[in-house]
Length: 60
Image 1 (tube, rainbow, N blue to C red):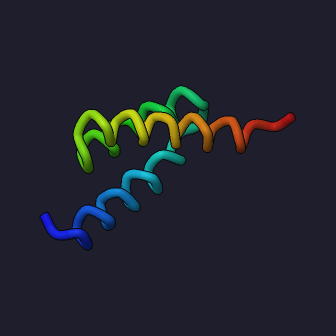
Image 2: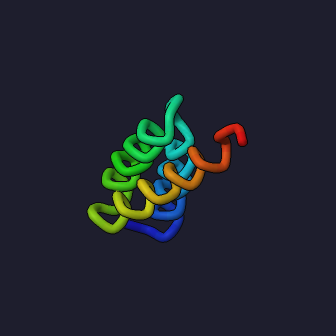
Image 3: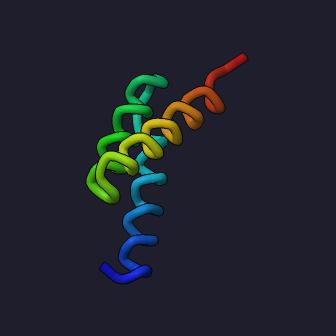
């Protein structure tokens, strides 16, 4: 894969990390998108990004 393709897939995975209504849903969609883009490492990064996005959007 070229660098541009990898960067595009990574950006898409991080954008999908914010999909969902709950923190768990955001983590799951991030993990799936990350796994598609970059395998197991991408799943971990996408899950972490989804969790962070979920906690950032939670009302205090």
